Image 1 (cartoon, rainbow, N blue to C red):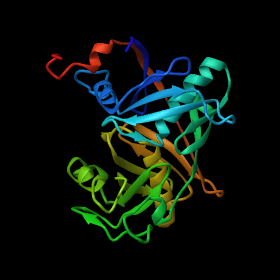
Image 2: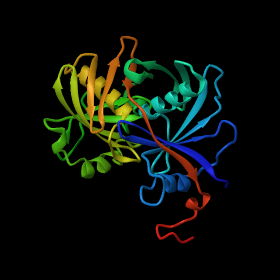
Image 3: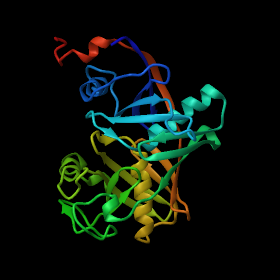
Image 4: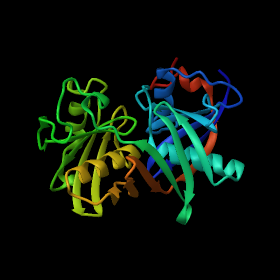
Length: 284
C-alpha cells in the first residue's frame, strides 16, 4: 500500500479522516480503519471517510463511511457536510449531491459559511429501525439505569432517543455501550440523552454506535428533533446543543430532515503505510 494523502476535518468536534479515492481506489479493511482512527498511534478520528466516484448518475460523488471500530455504516450527517464543503470549494459550486449507502443527500451552502444537508426521510416503523420485535417506536418498553422509555428513529442509521431531566448527569460512558449492543437492536444503535430546554432548544449528548461518546452527531441531532416533536415537546425546527456546539435541525412537512451547521479543516497530511502494520508498541 502506497502513501495516502488525507484531510482531517470536523463538524463541531465530530472528526473525520477523509481520503480521496476518485482517481485511484483505496482498499481499507476494518483493521486499517481502526489503525487510522486510533488517537494514540494513528491520525485519530470518530469516522474514516472515503470519497469515491458516484455509482448513481444523479450524484456528484459517493461517500463511504467507516466508524472508528472498523465497521461500515450508511449515514453520517456531519461527515456529509464536511465532504460537501470540500467538493464545493473544489468546484466552485454552491450545491452538491452526495451518494451514500442510505441514498442521495442534497447539500448546499448556507448563511454564515454553514453547510445544509437534506438527510432524507425519517423512518419510524419498528422494522425500519430495525428492532428485534414489533414495538411502538414512540414509546419503547426498554430501560437501562436512568435511561427509559426511548423513541426509536432511523435517519440512515438507528437511534434510541431518551428524554432526561439533565443530559450532563447521565453516565453515558457506561449505559451507551450496554444499550448499543443490546439484542433488542439487531444492528446495534446510537444512544441519545436529550434534555428539552424549550420548544426550540434541546441539550443533547450522544453515544455513537461504533465510535463512543462524540462531540457531535448529525444524525443523532436529527433523530432527537424528530423524537421530541413526535412527543409534542418541541416545534418542527430547533437548535440541538451538542458538546461541540449547536446544529439547526428542521423536520420538514415532506418527512425529510434538514441539518445546518459549520465545518472546519483541522490539518492535512500523508499516511505512511507502516501505520497499518504497527502494534501499540510500534512493533510489527
